[in-house]
Image 1 (cartoon, rainbow, N blue to C red):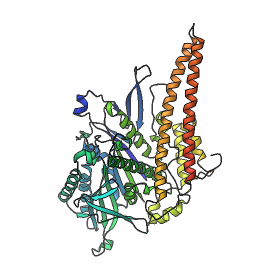
Image 2 (image 1 turned 90 degrees about the vertical axis):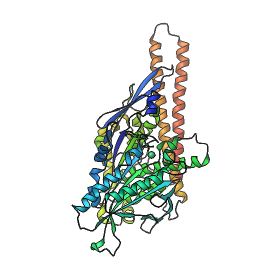
Image 3 (image 1 turned 180 degrees about the horizontal axis):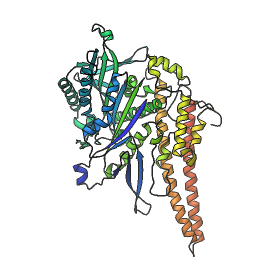
Image 4 (image 1 turned 60 degrees about the vertical axis):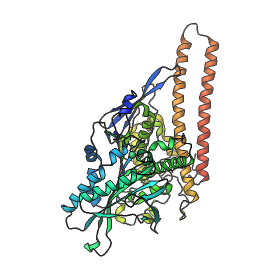
Length: 521
Ligand code: ADP
Ligand code: MG
């Protein structure tokens, strides 16, 4: 699977302009720079630049039409050729997800119908529309008065949403009405408008089906599918100010699903055998869209304002982690205005996706019904070689020596030393919960690491100042010694803390049998 990562920046809105907030996002053709204002210890301001590279960066002047042309139009034809495509909008509430997603399905339907009525005329193709919402881990049909839906998995691990209304459509006008109806149902929830929609994932699916042998008597089979997903606001996870229990639970659920989504995309892109679909309702529902020939487009929406800097950086880091690993030239850079070029680079995964199956072939066989659909997948060894090549290209292996942790996770023949977690047919078994907890802990570890690097850099700056002062004539030796002592113990404390965290995480991995201890690890 390939994931295309694009970023869309919206213009400053009235509220932000009224508050005199600045536009801190500088866009270039396929990269952008976030200018973050930070405070030094002495409270003077300095600018930190974070540069990110994506497949496309769409600035505030780009219209919805252009977004369609850039993101969805190219994938419409391939859904007639046994491919599933999924387009996500990710970002904090108010960043423009709904604004971006809303027009896309209708435009795509128009193109699909055009192809069906011309290129594929009389070939038995039909277009079906469904529209539902995942809210608090439960499914609701937006085309059937928010009827609560159940999900079932058949023997072949095919997920089926029981009772979901699917409408067969053959003209644009009908589709338009259905989409409008679904959108209206979505926004008239209990509290209405953005409040409610920011806590739910809305999923609109266009399925192309074909009657077998042109016989109308048999149910048509799915040929391809195009899904549009307006994800819940990404700020939820970090939002701890909500006191009400229900709200906190929802936040945790959203956090879990966005985390699981990221891990699934990474695992698929990495051609790993085991994909953690069961991490959340969202990923379970999307399982069939991710299997076989599939494409994903992640449109990350960002607000340009200085007040959203933290959220924007979080969104961009998320997007950065889902963007295709196999495309070597697309690595991100983060240029720090100050000395080191380390900051975003530390966002490299501790483990490239959790966890992978030991038996890749087996997994394909019981998950993918169609052998033809295997064409896209390389053996895991190849993908590691590719990845390694890419890392080399980025200069990361050589420059920073970050490769050690990666390499130690691999057996000499290049296979990852993960053990497949115990398969269980009981839904939401204990191991699923454990996996979720592990995914969260991995995220926490990476965040703690990032923070530690940041602190280290501040300490290094202080050290450099101290050295300059030490060279000044008349320098007080007492002062120098006491400051150096403080600095060194700060450094040591930071390292110890991170070491403890890392050791805990490793222990947890072992406890849950995810990682089999290997040589030197
Ligand atoms: P989200 O769905 O991410 O919460 P919305 O799509 O509702 O955010 O956007 C928030 C507000 O910003 C809306 O009023 C929307 O019309 C406006 N907006 C978002 N993106 C753009 C854009 N690219 N150009 C103009 N207005 C935008
Ligand atoms: Mg919205």
